[in-house]
Image (cartoon, rainbow, N blue to C red):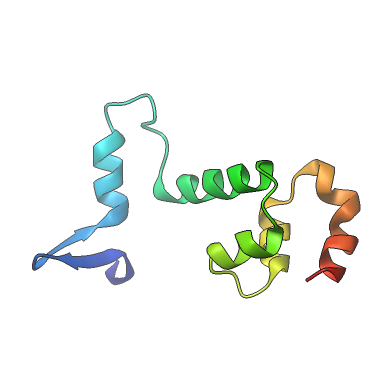
Amino acid sequence: TMSDMCPINGVHFSVSKTFKEAVRETRFAKLDVHGLRHSHASQLIKAGINIKTISARLGHSTIVIALDTYCCPEWIGKRPVLLMLR
């Protein structure tokens, strides 16, 4: 799609397609760009980074999106408290 296209030295390329081609022959062949995003968010959560910081880094308009998407089971009981902290 046009939203995937980026001009580099006058040449357009699809980030997703280029990534897929780069990992095709590796053990990460099933990983896509969206998977990297989820992996990144999960690692930030695991490292104890504040959910508001993670949410902003991912470009979410509110922390609710990050909580709903990346909320791990141990956070389920804490969600109301986390929402009050935003």
